[in-house]
Length: 249
Image 1 (cartoon, rainbow, N blue to C red):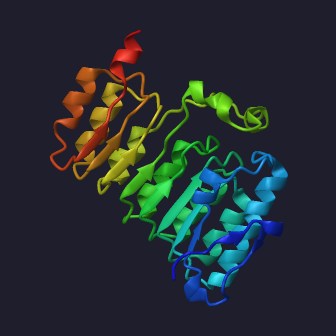
Image 2 (tube, one colour):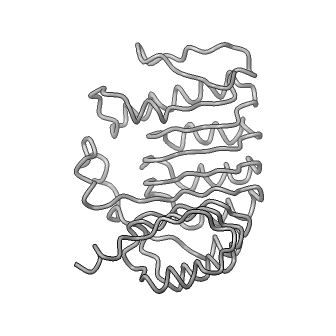
Image 3 (cartoon, rainbow, N blue to C red):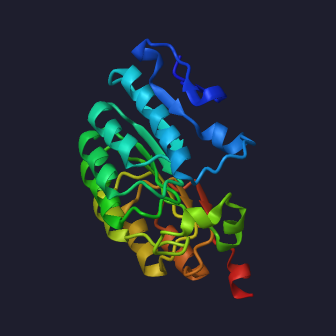
């Protein structure tokens, strides 16, 4: 068994104490399907997520390999960094209280990471991505998606989420970290980022193994730039392009 679930009632973790049965901590399905009305952007909610994650980390005794979570903070991720040397998959989506402090420590102490999703975690800088590129040489999947402005109003208690953020929820990516340190990438998602044709060209040139590329919502890209840059990717199996027609009107 490789799945750890939590019991919603009382927010308690209900898992077997055998470390081998605590190799995966996955809350993504719950976040996508739950109809609970709690404020997910509140400090109290983040503390509950942190407590659950740290509890599973403690039970795993170092065997935890996959973490998929939202709304955690640096506190639990620093705990992860010190106790999960075999971590291979890390999703920290929609985590406004996760910063470079914890993620850079994970990059240093969890070199086996193969998949990283930091979508909509706006406090992370380009330096964070560079640290993962330098230290996690098995990294093959990167997801750094941002949110369309038209979708922002769907966030529960959005004001609480954005009130301390210095930027709007359309972001940028430093192509230097990808092209210089992630030539082994096979899957790259950069939805709604503000990169240019030049940045995309440099990424495609230095990441020849790319098989999947998601550029949806990248309004600064041109049709010519996307076609020209991706034409060099001989292994590319699927690409999601910006809606160029929508950008013109």
